Image (tube, rainbow, N blue to C red; front, top):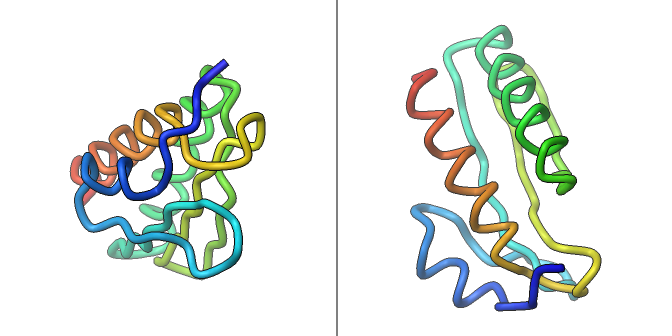
Length: 97
């Protein structure tokens, strides 16, 4: 099981992410792509990685925009799992840009 590191420690290791606005310990990022097809390709790639990690994002999609919130429910906050998935998402988004 991953240990809680908190949003501040995670944000120090990620680019352009922010702390969540709610009462929960979360990190968030909004990705914008050229079109819906590319946004869907991003979500599909992330879904495969998330499933392999058994660590699933909270996300919302409208056309070319994907809003992501990461937290680790097992530790009630942000963990290294969130950083790992966040880095994967950033890398995939850059490849699809």
